[in-house]
Length: 126
Image (cartoon, rainbow, N blue to C red; front, side):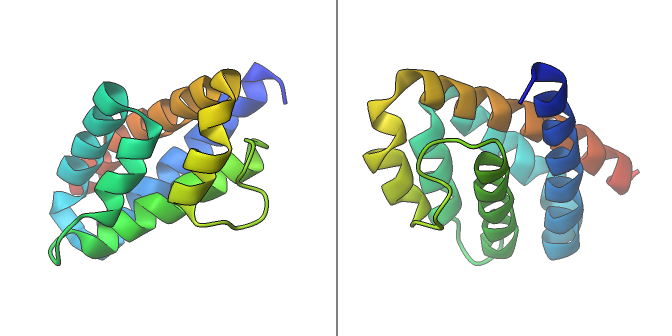
């Protein structure tokens, strides 16, 4: 995929994340997306997925939506380990951890999608 297609993919998934999280948890969607982006930027891809897994009852449904959209984005971008529907944490541990280029690309794609999602969620709230 060329970079234009990857940015378009991020934009599509940004909208999908915002819409599904907003439907799941309402006005708290923007806050959860922003926190998720912060975890991703500060602590990496594995921590991002672990954060989604650890959410409590209030955010659980929104976290599940983000996790599923993120998995689907990485699968569509042909990121190593996400083609066969593995457990997401296992895919990161077993595949991404061994390939720095793929890990950095996955992080960048997720960051861009979450940035777009944050703006979409803000627009939905307004």
